[in-house]
Image (cartoon, rainbow, N blue to C red; front, side, top):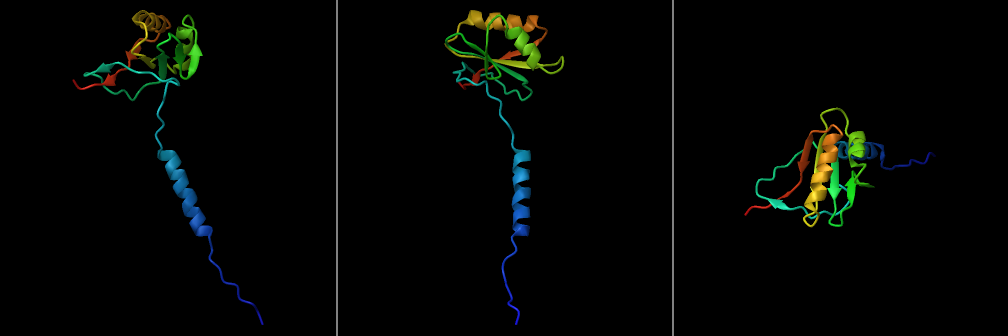
Length: 128
């Protein structure tokens, strides 16, 4: 007499789970962060940019970060030029509200001297 084993075949369910996993991985949007906590100033005219390639952060203490790595203020232009792909690179500077304006202007100048003309300063949208 043969013993009949009955069971549930899990193969189709595993196929569906893996397909769903692939779908969620592919459709996830990745948000770029500067790597440090920045308290941005507010502006009622701030607009969102989705074409940012490089984020430069200036902390309240005067430290400069490029894409999550601390950089010397003299080398920020070279580092940004290396990080930008192509000639139409878009750079956004996130300067902390308590940072020095002179450091922001100096950073913008060094980035422009490195050949990148499309530089913006980030602000939080504040409706006054």
